[in-house]
Length: 465
Ligand code: 4AD
Ligand code: MG
Image (tube, rainbow, N blue to C red; front, side, top):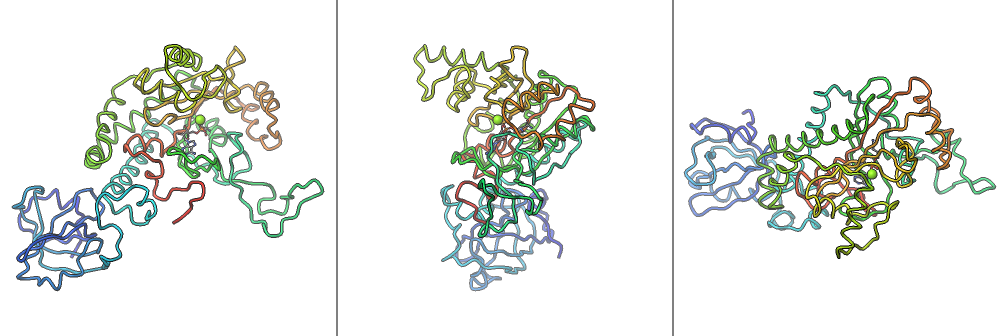
């Protein structure tokens, strides 16, 4: 018999029609006469209840139907007599696909800690929380593609293996087929990569931006959406060594339009979650973060604050004067610490902030330099609970200025020749940003740790599964 997915079965009126469902048993309880199986197939957070008449199915036959086992159940869909569900299935035929020994199956109890669930990341998608998170993750990916498609952007694929360090932060994972047990070095102690797979030193990309810029100089509006890798040794709830990034790049826009795009895009994604992930959000709102839905609604309905870095520093220094204590000093020229970002976003303004015009020395080489020659047109979006969710900027389109910045920073020119060609042939004003997909998911799900919004997190000293 053809399978009905549970999300569809729950939409049907229970008129006694025969249906078949398949899924994993969440629980089984009952008495001498009747047994109730809660079955979930991942299509929705909701379980379907299967009622077993023990006069027809001896308890003995039901023995393998324990929490975690996988079954196929056929029966009549009827209006439920119990509260809590509109319909249920009266079982007529049962097949057990796979058992799960109650002595060994780890997901028996409710309320297992997030830390423990990370150690069984291969099974945690079967919990309510992770089912909800990963359905939302899918929906957010769809929202992102929809947004850009509707707005005339082309999805452009940038390479994963690269020979250039976009952010210039030197936090790259090397890619090599060289025999590390027998690594030859020259007289200066340098490694000769000419006989390596690519004939040069290569790494996993930290960002698709540079290639994205090349594409924007031909297709006008593009975006990337792919995995990026950073070997930064940051053991925080907001950093992953492997994360997904969305990077739109647009020709002919300026700073204000870039900030408009950042704000409109994030609001679209959050609105999409509210519209498409209702059941899952309600679950998370109830069990993970009581303020979640209110926070999502508030972000959709407020204008983000737009603030320059210099104004931000003034507010922070004013706060310090009035008795606010920060661990780190806030002096003009320093990167904001996460406590500073959070003060601005959560205490001072109590809404998202787009901060712009940072000191050039704390930002990457490609950002457009302002006339003051001290600040650059970076436009980061700072979010409550998360901190930086988007890093963006207007790009320096002048070949001369870009060249002198590359020289000042000692970036190896020969690796950048193709990037510089965009400034040589038909240079155009352009801008773009990168959104950390998992940071967006932290916000949308209310989860506390970035390791819990990606199926198999990669962090320092962890690459299990
Ligand atoms: O600010 P970042 O480093 O900017 C770039 O990479 C630019 N090339 C983007 C662009 O303009 N096209 O990173 C962008 C975003 C951050 O705001 C953050 O949300 C996320 O990527 N991010 C991380 N997310 C998880 N783990 C990490 N280690 C992250 N590093 C950055
Ligand atoms: Mg950044």
